Length: 175
Image (cartoon, rainbow, N blue to C red; front, side):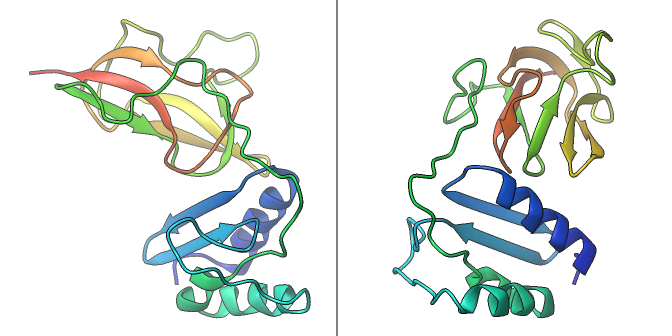
């Protein structure tokens, strides 16, 4: 398994502090999917008993297969709250790539408060260029562009909560 118990505990603690309805996490061959409200949008309903949550967390740590079915107890009136600065397209324009959030966390456009942003609209990036930071449990994770080109859109603002796979930037790929 590519996720140790400390990392799993950090993910669970971060989830406990945020509002979301559906969360997916992948690291290597480890996959975790959590839904509040007792069911996944694309799966048959499965509501665990209130006593099953601690066991599900233990099982999630023990095996990736069990983690896929681990779900917290339903919580009333919880909704996803990430609010991107610009509306991200469902599919990128031709010749554009979308840089997405590699994990759930807080988006930061610069290395520290008051510093210039890593990138802005119109900037040219290379695949290994750092475009932002996503903070999870006080750990700062650099996000690389992964593509060469020109930044055409920035979808998130400083301090926004971003979810795994959420579009952060659009980049017009270099020829």
